[in-house]
Length: 399
Ligand code: AMP
Image (cartoon, rainbow, N blue to C red; front, side, top):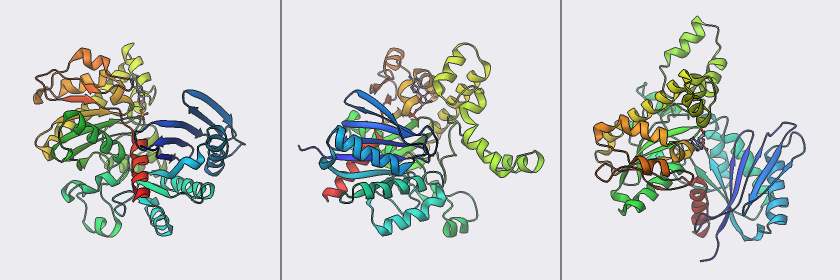
């Protein structure tokens, strides 16, 4: 099978992750990160076949300078790959209701993407900058956009509607969209393979636990409910995001305390979650280390993280009826035996019995079942969102 190499770009507001992936098997030929955009310290680091390198970009560089450097200096000169690329795949956080699947970029798609920007004001404009810079750098290559929200477009109305006056949905598009779709799609597909069942007959609950996190009920390969909402703020406890919250707290803080809307939203997005509760860090490893040393609020942060997670998992038995497997993925899901053990112990009502040795051994990229033989199945599946993007891009280009 010939290589199908795709340049995958994941543009944030101040950083850009990139990789060249073989869509046939997910192999990463090269990967890297450009960061600190618009700052004196703008830089790029990358990794080619285990060899790491880094350079400083000119001060205040951003997407366009970074993409030019990635294309000219790394992909063309260093690894001589440019002529083998078949497409550029872009991760887009929010596709609204318009985008239910990945598409090749044209003028109309760009215009529609701009319209979705109000739903993800921090992320979508950055991705559009990335598309434009990639179009300039590779004028002959097709650009494909792959959406975090698309996988969740199969949710039924009863799951995606908020209990608000319905004109807000019809006229303003206010509804739950869900995120991390490529990850939930990837691990649910891998779970069906691991269970040796047809995807259409496989029901799983997928817990993507990274710095951001979301839980999805996947029935026969389709998302039927998910924990994030119109934006990535809703759902479980995250690194710095609060997850579900009584909205009246916002009014309370603004009208009775000295907060503005801006400071409240900044707090909910950037100073809450594991960071806010523990007062230590948004990084799970730091919080776990402090908890192990007896830090009270670090312990509370982990307890709240696991408790909320377990409640979501229990709730998602409702849309599924039968659960073939519970899947842990993302940095925390793939590596923290502590979280997995705590969560499964909170779910013993469903019969989960952890296999402690397997649970402890399954980390650092390993896949496997972490429950005992007579227990319902819980397993770890490392995610690979970049591979999904490369596969979708390759499929669209071949079609
Ligand atoms: P992600 O956003 O998927 O890269 O995940 C980032 C989160 O994974 C951070 O909170 C990390 O602390 C956490 N993480 C990464 N490695 C480990 C590990 N070995 N044990 C526990 N948590 C980890």
